[in-house]
Image 1 (cartoon, helix red, strand yellow):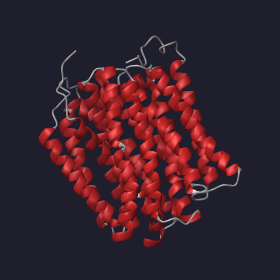
Image 2 (tube, rainbow, N blue to C red; image 1 turned 135 degrees about the vertical axis):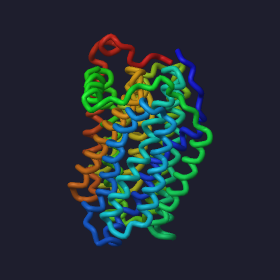
Image 3 (cartoon, one colour; image 1 turned 45 degrees about the vertical axis):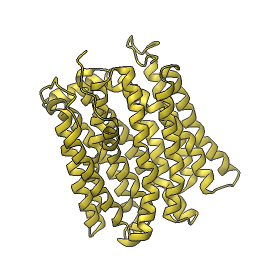
Length: 403
């Protein structure tokens, strides 16, 4: 196997964090945007759902581009777009321009998310890559951990534009660090496929039971989290009358749960079968909304009754996603970048659809949130069963080996 230079893990963490940081730092400000721009809830919701669509579509582009031109130059281009779009959002005079700026910000921010997965798969063996990716995701979880609290306080102290100013600085710093210190890990460059060849590559990947099944696990589990994300800020603001900063502080618990799951994979991967960790995560992700439903049935609605059970869901996501992502990206190493982008497209496409569907109902309705979270995670369980249904390792392939 070709030896690739090992990039700095902290730099990979920072590059991966750009997208989640931009996604979550703005969420506490969303209810207030209806007043600032005299806009409807559905219009403001576009700043979230179009962000997710931008991330989904952008990842389809970055995968093949990084296979053709290399990981480093494509990542630098994405980070540059991210910083420029963040500046555009900070200066946006209308909700329409803010929505457009968020879409561009998403396309730039997703570069780190998709290319870092491919870099990890380039530079480390499969079992090592699972543990490294778990470390990267655990470190990256710091961004969504602090972003809502930071965004809430910045909104209260300086106004909603301050969060975007912070993102301009963060994006610029990560770009400069990558320019100076990121090695190229993909030497076997492949020609950029035309539309027909690219479609054939996508069909080939989707035609593999393991890839499709694991990609759907990633998508549906992420969709369950975005159902919560789409409704929780309004539930706190409108239903429970809590300030944006309190939403941000509770959100820290969710990121801590996700990070704990990632760290468990990294620490236990050498001693416990990865399939076992993934199944445990799936079951925890189903248990979370069931507990919320129990509180609702008892007539108890509070921040704790919404956020604490969701910690179980996030812990489950942290256990399952590194395993299924690594397995899906590694189905064909020649197309690792394309596979990474396609997994990201499925992940964010389902997340955007789940977020948009939640927005069709009463904003912040806890019953809608709990039901949506339960349905999406049951779908993830079904996708896992499909992936494993081709035999012990899924149609004769080694899906996830013990580390």
